[in-house]
Amino acid sequence: MSNSGFENKDGQEALKYISKQEAEALETELLEDYRFGKQQLIEILGHSCAMAVTKVYPLKTLTKKQPTVLIICGPEQNGAIGLVCARNLRAFDYEPTIFYPKRSVDSVYKDLTTQCEKMDIPFLSYLPTEVQLINDAYNLVVDAVLGVEEDIKELKEPWATILATMKQIKIPIISLDIPSGWNLEAGNSEGINPEVLISLSAPKLCAIHFSGKHHFVAGRFLPYDIQKKFDLNLPKYSGTECVVEL
Image 1 (cartoon, rainbow, N blue to C red):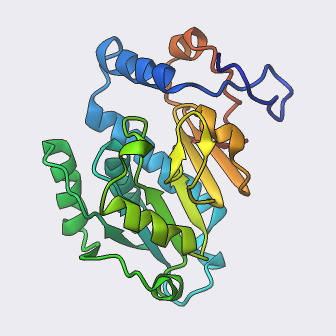
Image 2 (image 1 turned 90 degrees about the horizontal axis):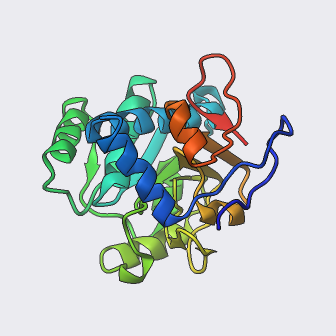
């Protein structure tokens, strides 16, 4: 069903792009069979996302005087990964700001929010609808809004307005796993066009339609038996890298 993909740079068997069902099964296996903790997975993935950002946009290449980054976090796991990404970017000397309009009541997500607050990462109370304010204030936007578990058909407020604003942003957008407005399997119907996509664990089917400049996979932590079971054919990671660019 989802063996579509491309040969990677080493010419090995085509990388697999996985369906929603496969993505959920893979995560369930990590949590239940391999005994990864939910917070542990969020930490690994958030750190990997921050590493990918530093590779494409090193501090010295940012055009604005301050190394500002806006991270827009959704209410579920993708938003939590965005919080960890923000905390790691802060440790790497970037200046993240978080917009997190619907905070989860999940204790893990609350802890991640507290960590960001304790590191003096500012939280916006609203997202400016005048897009030029965003373009002027930040170098980059990290889109951590929608994850595997959310359905684009159910996009209600404030997300519909946030998506409309994000579509007009001119500075580079980095999307985590699934760009905002995209369907996990069908791809981009009315969504944004990010410059960077970071696929978490393995690329989802929608990533076949990604036409931006940089596509990373953050899946080095996956046990070999899981990679084999799901026929992921992940590319080789160099050295001690936790992400690889396709």
